Image (cartoon, rainbow, N blue to C red):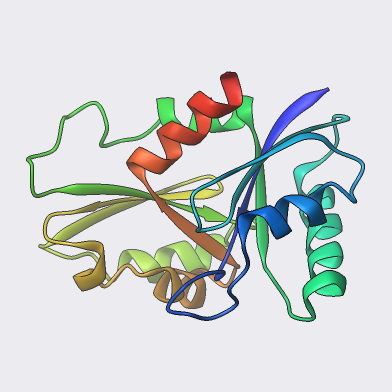
Length: 180
C-alpha cells in the first residue's frame, strides 16, 4: 500500500462548496482506499491505496466527488514520497524567509508546456518570487498571498492546467501526518 495525499481545489472557500470533513471522509471511504484522514477544512485528504498513477487516482476521486456532491472538485494527488521530494527541492525553504515572507506551493494537475512557462516568466515581480519545477510552482511572497499576483487562478490561466495552492506549513504538516 502507498500513502497518498489528495489536494482538493475550491472547497470551503468563502462559503462556496462547503463540505464537512466527516462527509468528505465518508465519500473517500467509498473508494478502494484505507485509513482515510482529513486535515483542516481546505480539502486535504491522506489515505492508503494500492500503488497507481496519481493522475488516474485523481480522476477516480473527481468522478466520485462529482457523483456524491453534484459539482466538480478538481483534485491533485501526490504520494507521500513525492511530497517529501517536493519539500526537499524547494528553492526557497533553505533560506529561512524573513518573518513577513510566506512560502506557498501550487500543485499542478499536469506538466505545463514550455511555451506557457515562458509566458509566465514574463510576469516576474519585484515583490514576489516564483519558480516552476515540474508539477509544482514554488512561491515566495514578501507581503501576503492575498496581495500576490501569483494567485491560484492566475497560475491556472497562464500555465493552462488545473492547480491548487497550499502554504508551506500545511505542506509540511501533510507530510508529517502521512509519515505518522
